[in-house]
Image (cartoon, rainbow, N blue to C red):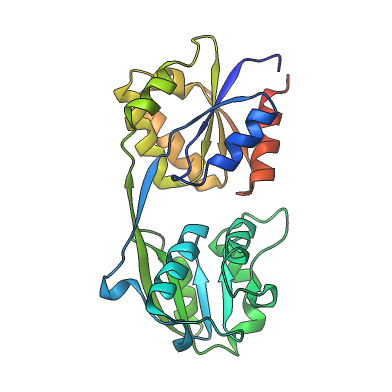
Length: 267
């Protein structure tokens, strides 16, 4: 590549390795520095409800799906083929398809390439199903928007909400800090931002390393306009009002790779 750059992969632990491998094959340097740390809420009463009690399970992320299915395994429950699995986008659908007992015909999600892959896009897909459903389970982390649950309630459905994992700012290890400090000064950052919550956590960590201004000049890859809004707010609060480069993509590895390659191409 003619432009020296290092990609900062900031999805939660376990979600960056496939991207790092693909970037290495393309001879693009990367550093794995998760913005958020996730923990399953095992053993907490409100962290699990059995799937057989619901017409549909609604997952806000791939992590929500993985943690719920682990809780289901621990409880000894089995997913019925008649239970619908609704999710916010293709990445979450792929995560579900990798889990035991899931069949493609159970999935409902916004598959269009131009979709924002969010709660609003999912809601637009659900109209044919609402008259058949009476009770749904909304599976998420311990923080998040209430919009989707409110839409179900306004449509007359009974909604239960469970938080199957907690999330908080990740504390970067010495190895991760050294890896980031070791990025050549002439190399620019390309920073993947996959959630609004992670933006402030990443900003805090780079400030601790004295790299905030260099990070603020990154080309940012975001998967939703809300993330870009939070990023601009963080930079404005820090007194940095320069123009920033932001490329938007879908939350799939293929789309992220496309955005990274586009950011490396001369304008």
